[in-house]
Amino acid sequence: MGKRKSSAKPPPKKRMDKLDTVFCCPFCNHGSSVECRIDMKNFIGEASCSICLENFSTTVNALTEPIDIYSEWIDECERVNNVEDDGA
Image (cartoon, rainbow, N blue to C red):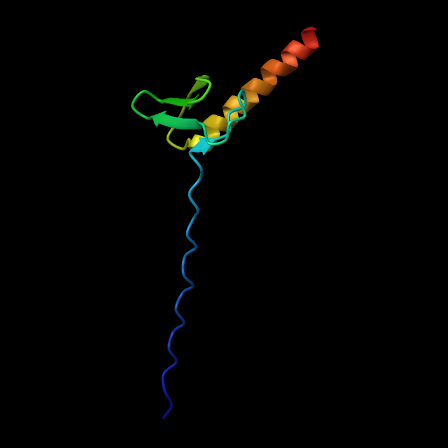
């Protein structure tokens, strides 16, 4: 009589890399100076630079990550710059 076939083990789950919480400031270009904080109690996300003291606040939801707040800040800066260029 033969041996029973052993069932193959499932492949190990891939671990997700942690996303950054500190970024480069769009105003002073200092690396790792912008820190993003999320206040889920008040549904507010804030990105602030520790060097030039610029800050940005936005509303957040349960799925918001620090990179989302920083990306919104960058998008808002680009939108303001484009409006100024069109008006000039």
